[in-house]
Length: 446
Image (spheres, rainbow, N blue to C red):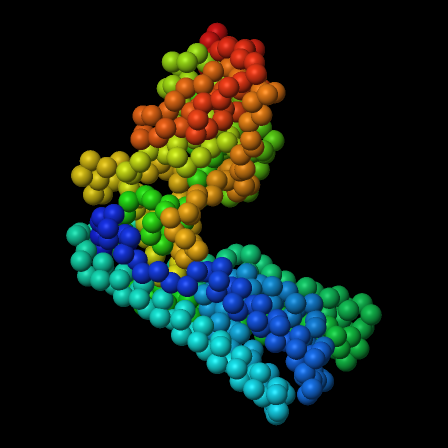
């Protein structure tokens, strides 16, 4: 084992074992069930309660820029810990209001409601964590995982980077304004700096502390479950994970081949800023990967690349991926975990192949219905890919062929001037122009 790698226990899971991950409250229900009632309670206390909530000296803090940005950041990153934040907010209302009469019953009822949500969220996490620990105890060996791949478990990486950006701005912006006034209008006299800026900075500090506490709690959760590499069947409709597919993009190595101009396109002008730097967005005018290049291929040549996801651009679908593949991940510790994909060269001795490298796991969140969960497709810049509908009456169809090599029954329909479409059934075009309609040289042609 090298110094840059960590030896981690390995567990291979069957389809049935991966499907046994216990269901929990759907993440969308939990989010709506926390923030909507909390907002309604605040509106009631401020505007409609007989004994209204008087913010008093707290008002400048609670309506400041830092408080608003901090609230949005927590909404963004709290995840399944949102009920705990809401419960803390309600308990602070009790302290601020000292309620009596109907307000007392409303606030106490809200506290009980959020406490129940906390319990439900905690039970779901404990059940998931217990299953993960049992898989760790049943490890079938160990594998080396690059330490760099496990950075997502670090204290500052376990929350979304967007949250830290927003939380940091809630402190840094007022701090910068304080420094500016200190050296300009205030004449280096702190007493002459606007009091509102000190309020903004104080609120921003509180926001950062709350984010650090949330991050620390998630970090402890992650450390409470032993690190394990899990190999499981790739199935978006089963298990706790959703997946992201990188489409309309090719690996860096493929972009370096002769005549390929993808790396030189404006979409890849700042390669280091790409969300997935190991890929390059396809150039529609590329002589190898462009629209006309793909449409100029004859049927046999197109068949050779028809299972490559980049071919279809924004029209790519998860059904194109081969069935029965398997994936290995590390860093799954429960709900809201963001596991990373690791090398797939371990226990594929059963004859299964690895899921294509451009398919990555997303954050573990419970959907409303697992069976209806779909992959999310993005390009190398993390731009969402949405397939447009084929207009059979206007489309100039070049050809269409069924893709049945990977257990799929999709039809690849090539259309003049567009990326090929993936459809469930053949089309009856108003006009069919035939292969080679697009004027482009085939890849490899002189």
